[in-house]
Image (cartoon, rainbow, N blue to C red; front, side, top):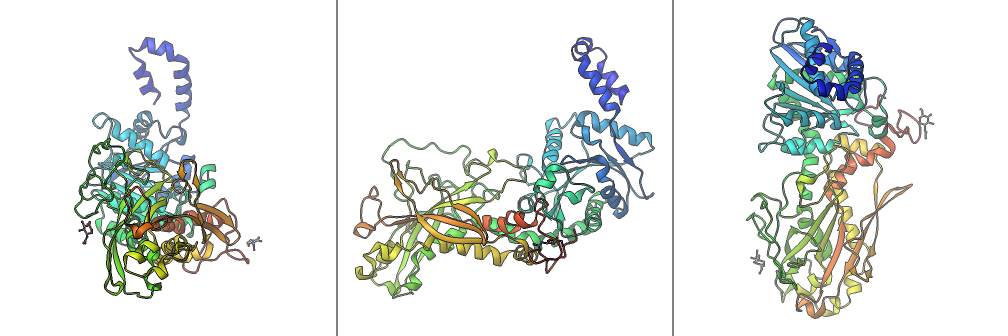
Length: 574
Ligand SMILES: *[C@@H]1O[C@H](CO)[C@@H](O)[C@H](O)[C@H]1NC(C)=O
Ligand SMILES: *[C@@H]1O[C@H](CO)[C@@H](O)[C@H](O)[C@H]1NC(C)=O
């Protein structure tokens, strides 16, 4: 390698003079590069080179056991080069250096694959491979261990532009399983996405956890030997182009990830697709009647550029199917057969150009045969970015990817019952119809209950054993401040208590003046809630709600003891 760096200096004397001290330092440092080369364990078949780039502050020799498991499982003869950890992201020098060492030892490979561990390091590798496609030596495929194809490099058919194997663990605290679920749902094309049950982030390597892993990883539920053998099985299948084995991995993965993907659909996650803009409808599926479709300030809103795709997401199906129903509670009315249908639309609840308000489009005389036509408005709030600009999203595997709350505007129970034709005797007092501080809470409880019952059997068992439950507490009425109602900015409140993580919504309601027959500037008949996204509930059950008792940082999970958890479905071995 020193030869190569010396060669680079030729004809660059000014550069050399200016950077001499740095170059000397680099030479000294690269001379110490401790790449590891493993000869193939098998001979015959194809000869394949696998270069492993260590991640998460781990040393190269912490990947030897994983590499050997891959060699053992493969039918090809696999040469493995594990790049010196200190220079593992200096791709320009590390790749030719390690390939040269492998060739010097006699390797003549027909294919080369790169494997990278951890989201941060695999992001740098993807940056490198994407920067100048022609110039760089491109591998035949990419193996992402506890990492994923970055959204920004996702091709139109999904996945990276090289054949890729994405391998996640459902006990990985750094590369959350929900992010792998996103990859499973979206990155089709040339990608395989496989989740290994019970495998943590650290188990893609071996030995002592680095500080970043110690801080964020979850406890594994399988032994390291078993983790390495399943990693070996699927990486080998990818290197061998063994489609049957990859398909078997994919179908087992569906059991773990399908419930998470369904939660994303219930949310209307913009990790699955762009959200529609109800001012500029592009999807005929939305069929969302605008109301009031008027603004005080006549300035028109600019058209989005680019326009949302025609298969954009209209609103949240969880909100559409549950929220207005639990707000109206016709089942508690004297005529439970009164009914309605609702359309939800994602929109900024602060937008006034035009205004976006929930609405009831008709009135009934007889509640018994009533079918109301209603809308709601939902604004999803994410901690990883702005709901309307998907390209700006944090994509680090660590930040939750679900909406942290929905700001949802619904029609009040008073407005629903009056429009359905119930008498004023039972509807005139808004404190009686909408005064309960359990209405928004009941919607959030329904979201959590759905996630608990929809989670995979293994996720359920683990959460009921070591999970920190959500406990829903009464709604708090949002105040009217000097700048107007504070409901928009009042964020859902989470507080850790001995009985679990309490979740408190904010509620805001307005009198249904003149049965709602008033100009739109009169705020009549609304009841707003902060709603728990069912995907946030699922992400809590599968990742974040396990951190308190089931992470490396919390030493409370062991095999026995009173408050020490044991798993009914999968045994905790470490
Ligand atoms: C609901 O009302 C809106 C506004 O009048 C109308 O455009 C829409 O067609 C109605 N929906 C149905 C299913 O009747
Ligand atoms: C959990 O188990 C460990 C080891 O078995 C024990 O030392 C510890 O006291 C237990 N904790 C509780 C709360 O029982």
